[in-house]
Image (cartoon, rainbow, N blue to C red):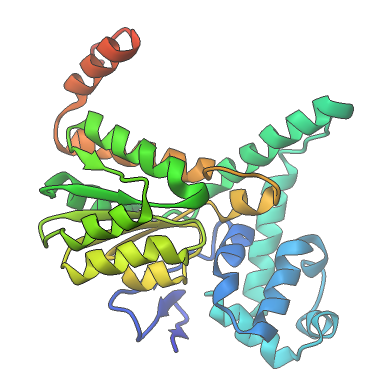
Length: 304
């Protein structure tokens, strides 16, 4: 089992990398992304922080323990498991998070207008907080690995499948051809055929989709570099991935009825394709391809 250090870095002896936490930003989304990795008693405390952050911000550790049917020691241990120094540290981060969110107040319109606006407002809030705790060094390492790879395989299923198709497209346009088989068996066979010079880009919101992780396991066994994209930091994908990108837990939570790709993940994949194109110095060619395919006017970069 891992241990949390005062500097906010989570050390897990079961994996070969260190997951750096950033508890100073995006507290609610960070807690949500780590919640599945906690033991049940800690999950009750964390869930209260996610579902009722305004209330928790005004509670003491003893009050939160009583409210969740746990103990003050469990509250303290939960905060440390989440990467905070203790309850007061987590409470301060919640207050900061709430203050930032309240400054962007929103009131829904009537009827269907409010429901449509609610969809966009939920996505807007998720996008606004998604990049705050993003691991940019991991992103840079993932882009570099993809740019240097002989071939790139993208695997995903279910609601993450649209992201796989987008990733294959943007990477191909950027100059690094990528394949994204839609069939789970084909994904696993293709993953098993990879080499240490290849990259397998694995997309799963939960980080635990068994079909997708089957292909990831096959790719890892073949020695390929694993780039993982998930909404949850401490997931099985986190144990497999060479480079782990974590984003989108807030988007996953705001609408339980939605079906389809995580819009935060789609934007991360767009950015990943752009960065790969930059590393390959293919920006000009990308503009030309898009112009020819979609009638977009290719503009020259600003030389100033």
